[in-house]
Amino acid sequence: QVQLVESGGGLVQPGGSLRLSCAASGFTFSNYATSWYRQAPGKERELVAAVRVPTGSTNYADSVKGRFTISRDNAVNTVYLQMNSLKPEDTAVYYCNAVHRLLPAIYAYWGQGTQVTVSS
Image 1 (tube, rainbow, N blue to C red):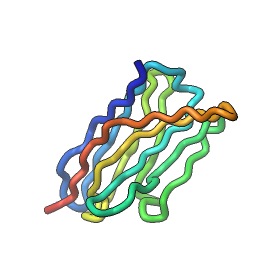
Image 2 (spheres, one colour; image 1 turned 135 degrees about the vertical axis):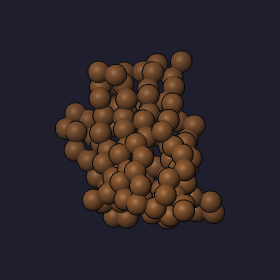
Image 3 (tube, rainbow, N blue to C red; image 1 turned 30 degrees about the vertical axis):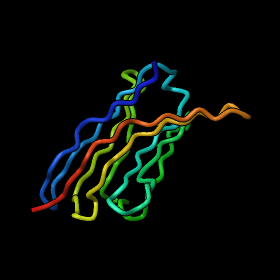
């Protein structure tokens, strides 16, 4: 059974930090590019950060560059999002995503999301 399970969300004050984790199971994690997305109330889901395979190259939304860091540990099938200098506008539900392109097929999985609230 394929699963992506996020954890680490919560309430944090502006300027604080959180680390999100996403534990994968049921598929060959090392073959999948992984990303974090977020969706704020009334807004569309947006890409926050991604890490590709096998290169490990990363990319970030302009709004989080220099504050967030995505990383992954294939030994434990987990992708992380370290979030520093958090701002109220970072408040959203954060989702983990894993994608593997074996053309013509594309395999994509989503986690259930974890709430991040930045407020004083």
